[in-house]
Image 1 (cartoon, rainbow, N blue to C red):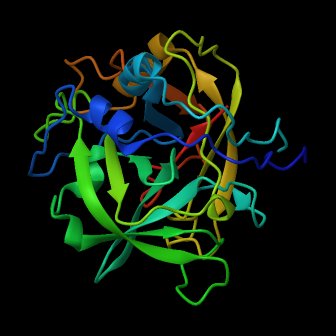
Image 2: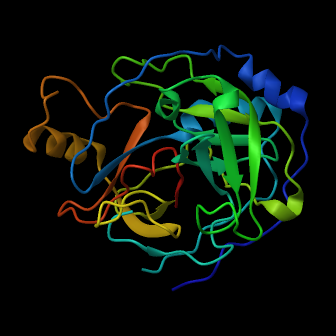
Length: 272
């Protein structure tokens, strides 16, 4: 089953450094968009392309961060263990509960998907649950944190989600080092080789179509973008005349289906 993540203390960096990145054209938006789903395949935005270039100039990437298990063995997934994915968070609509996943990248910053905010961009609508394996508020070692700001990438098109489906959430209060480990972000030039085994985690719908009660983990291989594009068109996509796999996307999953991230997993991490 491999080894658990390495838990280390994140580098401390300032609010002004992060604000430098956010001032580079970030904006707020509104209204929803349709999702594109093909059985067994998962589209994921490449976080590095949007974030690392600015962060490298600002020198604010953590010097140490969490690492996923090397490999071991969500739909078709398995229960995760306590502390296994310490960057995983749950994004809540305050009155309704869990809607999306997310990844801690700093003591006050969560990386997630822009489309998670289709209902509203008002920070008071949301909380972030940090720690624990379940969605219960009574769970030990977990806390619910208010949201101060939501920043959606300016290239995100709410009408068709053709680009930029990524967002930053600023927490209202900083987390203590003992509460989390930030996820590692790759450099923009990091090769994403087809066949590389990565991990998705989340509380999304299971085979029974209910939200998972315990955090699920699933190993998925990266797929060649062109092969993935062909599969989207051959499986009856209504968008058959348009390019689906954009330059800021990657594809991961199983051609035969059955194992995949699902509704409720949106915005969560894919770590390799």
